[in-house]
Image 1 (cartoon, rainbow, N blue to C red):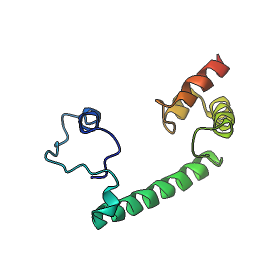
Image 2: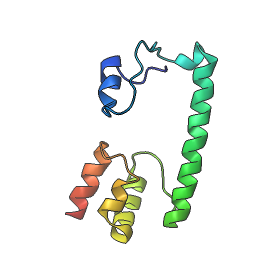
Image 3: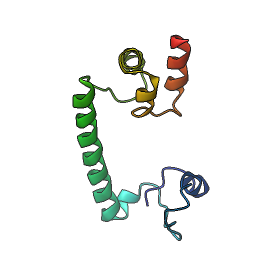
Length: 107
């Protein structure tokens, strides 16, 4: 597996006891340079992500921007005013600093 976080932190994210837990994973930084299957999985995951983003853009009739910038903050405020905070939580990364900034602006 491409190592994007420490092994202990990775396993802490897997908190659904009904899901089987895979053990003995090989974590490798820049895993795609060692294992072609990691590179292929990354391509497939990106494609699935972009398909889902397109579906969300159509559902909400808005172009949802990527990243963490003032453009994203402006979009987020417009989205929340139009669809509400609970709907926003379905599409946003709530652990990003932007989320706290947006909540402060709306308060």
